Length: 217
Image (cartoon, rainbow, N blue to C red; front, side, top):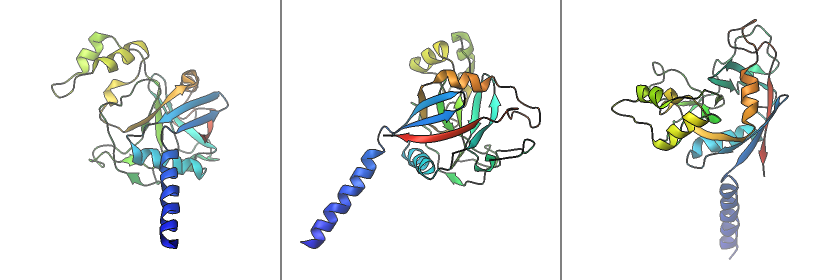
C-alpha cells in the first residue's frame, strides 16, 4: 500500500513538472524594454535546457554581446557578466546539446535560435548549451527568396509570407536550432540592433546591454 502510494505521488510530481513546461513563456528584460517569448515544445531538449538555465539565474546580468543590424542580437555568455569593455566575448565554455532542427521552425524576425560552432568543427550542428540569438533581419521579395532556394530546399508559402511581411534571415533555415520566438516586444530587437558597436570589440555594443530572464507562470 505504502509503495503504491509513493509511486503515485512520484508519478504525479513528475507529470506536473513535465506539464508545467508546456507552452512555457519567458520574459527577457532589458533597459530598452521587455520581450515576451514562448519556447517550442517540439524542441524539448532546448526548451528544458533553457528553462534550467533561467531557473539557475545563469542569464541574469549577461550581455547581448554581439549585435549586427538587420541580422540578429546574440547573448547568453556567462563570461559577459561584468566583462571589461575591451574583452571579446562568445567563446563557448557551456558545453553542447544535440541539434533539434525542425523544418517547421524558421528564422523569421523574433525567432530564438541556438548559437553554435561552425560546421567545420561541429558537423552535427550541436547547439551551445547557453548562448542564443534573436533574429532581427529584414524584409525579402519573392525574387530574392527564389534566388536562395535550392533543389533540396524550397521555402514553404507560410515562411515566404513571414519573410516578406515581417522579415527575418532565411539563409539560416535548417542550419541552426530554432527553439522559440518573441511574441511581444519585437520593437526591442530593433532598438538593441540599432545600438552602435565596435568601439572596443567588433560587433559588441559600445554601451553594455544587460538582460535578465525570468519564467512566466
